[in-house]
Image (cartoon, rainbow, N blue to C red; front, side, top):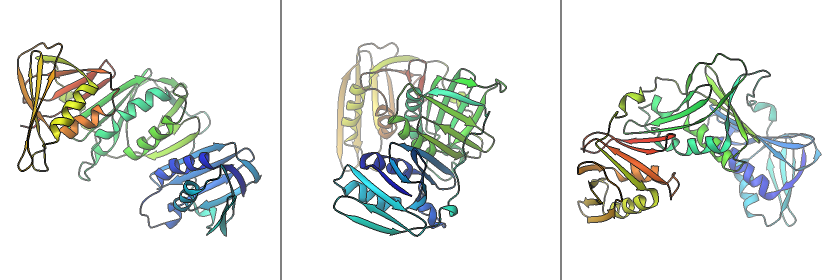
Length: 371
């Protein structure tokens, strides 16, 4: 294949599909990407055999259609360092050559047939449709809460609860829970019952990255199958195997009542938490929050670092004074994915039970306190 294309567009595409390239694998071909030059576009593919992506790059000048395996790490470095606005790719099964106005690079090639294809939607397949902007926000506000520990296998997935008119994403690591909702539409005549599937965070992060570069109003098609899932955006198709295991009954842990309801502006609260967290250390990852009418005081103390005390006004407060402690990381990770000027409602029962942050009807974040 011989292709001339925009350096910036190809660099962005390589950085996106590169997310699916495995860091380690027993099959070296998958540490590369596959490129398919068609008459009107360049398709880039990457997979670790669990998560895969097919990404369309439109606009390149296709001099000669064909297929090739490209070393994505070195190609990305070449594109990042090149001062040119356009580059020329000339690649086949024997070698890959990259030409700019002042440089030429040649790298060994591999047989494109050795690279597995990425599954695509089948004709007539039933799917759910969500707006790209809604889905990106839902992913961003949940995926960070998924478990990272190997032992919590089922919790390492993001739960998809899909109904005819509503989609819900849920993530937990056992100490916190994030639930985001948004409108969805069932396309087709499939039975209108709810579906629940566990999708790995790697696929969610890849999808969120693609959505961030696109039009928020564009539809995203979601097909959840027995063992895998497909996501189709304006520019890409993402394939993912599902996480096996039983997700915990998350609805059971959400408190049904609250003794105090406190409005908190995201930026102000995040600033106070970060200030107080300066004096925490590895042994004492704890901030104690003293809530009372009109006032919030945050206190932290490390074994060797010292102590901090930060005050913050609360414009509205209903309920008794409550002291409760949290790991500050569990708060800052949530607050960083929210809109800074947004006002959250914090629901507290007492200092021992889980706290719940709410953003309207579409977002809930539960944190288990330190006792």
